[in-house]
Amino acid sequence: MSIKVWDYLQEFESEKKEIMNSIDEVLKSGYLILGERVRRFEESFSAYCNCKFGVGVGNGTDAIFLALKSINIGQGDEVITVSNTAVPTVSAITATGAKPVFADVEPDSFLIDTEKIERSITSRTKCILPVHLFGQCAKMNRINEIAQKNNLFVLEDCAQSHGAEFEGKKAGSMSHLAAFSFYPTKILGGYGDGGMVITDNPDLYQKLRRLRFYGMEKTYYSLEQGYNSRLDELHASILLGKLNHLDEYIAKRRRLAQNYDTFLKNTSLILPTESAGRKHAYYLYVVRHPRRDLIMEELKKRDIFVNISYPWPIHTMSGFADLGYRKGDLPVTEQLADEIFSLPLYPSLSDDEQERVIDALLDILNIIQ
Image (cartoon, rainbow, N blue to C red; front, side, top):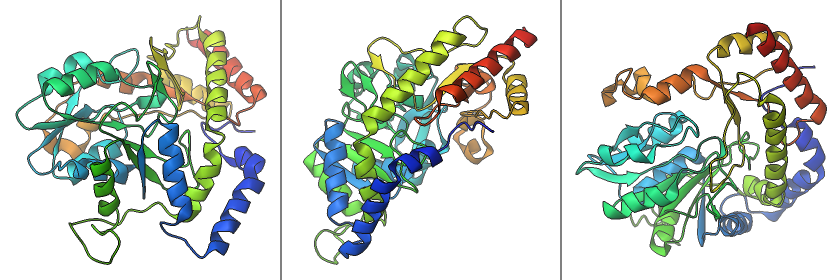
């Protein structure tokens, strides 16, 4: 049978009764939008992240966009982030009218290189947006130092880092605001789109609640220009149940990652590192190899499917050509795009399936060396 890079069906079967009961309860409640379950999930998830407030929104892209709008990011402003990320990080910035400015990444962690941030700051810079990529947090202590020195906001993109930690602090708890996605593939994923912004700031919290609902509060009256981006009751209820399993999911991901570390450490693959002070949640197990494409082809022949995250750095995409970047501007990011790929890793991946992946890789690497 095929081994996919991600699959949810077995996990769904094991949690099916709980999930179907939560759906049934919602449909019988009479409330489908912004009801009790959304409120409970907002409170529970933000508390899990050690933050005071959470605002459920339609998806992770909206979470970034609305977080930026809540701090008045707009036309003429600049936001420093990375090109080695999913397109939504950058499209959310451009949707506000602001300009994304890219810093290169560290070759070992794939995260924003904090030594490259300050050279990107201009009089127009308003925010630093670090991406906690693949399940590991950026160096938030240094990022916050730079932000405080230059009077900048910090917004964490936590779409891939639910439950990850940096120096004992949870992803999302180390900045002015943090944005999460609950897309199905995520560490805490639902069965459709969903997102959340968390913060400790009560004023930003209230503004975010207005922004997600046409700028309204208690009555059908817009206090400011707002949008339509709401986490629905069905997904909130499902996610509330899955939140109880989140630490279990992460523990399984870390165990699978440790297995890969153990059996692949003496090969020509460059394995992911868990940098000092970090707890990696392993949203993805991302490896590097200069002959990546050949390895992927050989794995496919064995019915094992892996994934590239991301094959094209955003600054090289035609859709963002107006930003003025050229190939060669971010050398580390560009090299990674040619070499990285992620191995199958998700909580329901069985030991036998992982062993098959490892055996296939060892065989292929032996042949091509």
